[in-house]
Image (cartoon, rainbow over all chains, first blue to last red; front, side):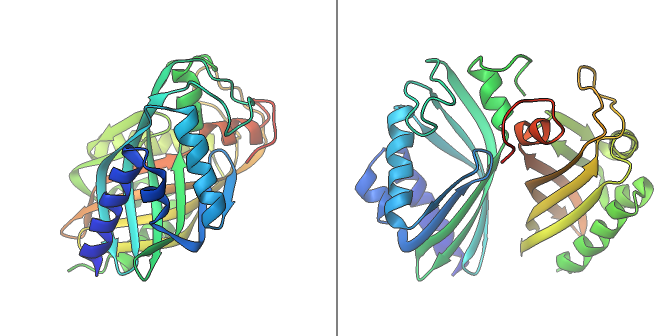
Length: 143
Length: 140
């Protein structure tokens, strides 16, 4: 079981990295919830989560996730990742974080919950300040 | 296999009693404690102790809650909430506001023979700065 979840998550991230929306959304359960803790955005339901990814793929046309570590237990999994890309548009935050055209790479961790092989919940933790510093919207040396 | 849940429960108690020596005793000799958001890596018991001593001065009423705990073999992950009053500042450029914050984060543990060989803490500094009043905007 645990091995399956790891395999599913790896395939899911490959779909995300190819910006294949149909393939990406095929992993979501109908009642899937995705929470971006740093942005305080909770997407509730398969349609909302898909919309979240539409915005992400639009805002960061070269968005990419790299898996740094992953472990699974039953229907749960925890992954450390690096998310990188270039901030070209600002549809997700409706210009509250304006696009600067700069690139970023931020480390984060997500907790995933599955049911019958479909993703029911992802909670993503990362440091928004690192992002803001890297794209030049906040002073200071990015970590 | 070591009982990771039990170990981490005791580990949490050590944090909540602000006992740096006790906390460090959970690590391997070459253990790594990584504050990912702050970009601070402490290697080995001496460096981790130094980090903790500063930490408990800055956040003298620090409280750690484990909201969830996942474990598999020699890995564990936990969603956490850190609550404290920002009573002192050892970080240059971050003034003390005396305000209280409550911050969600995630922690990854790698273990070797029941000891922590790596801990990595993920959280959002923007939320911290907003809550203590050092950045405008509604905290998330």
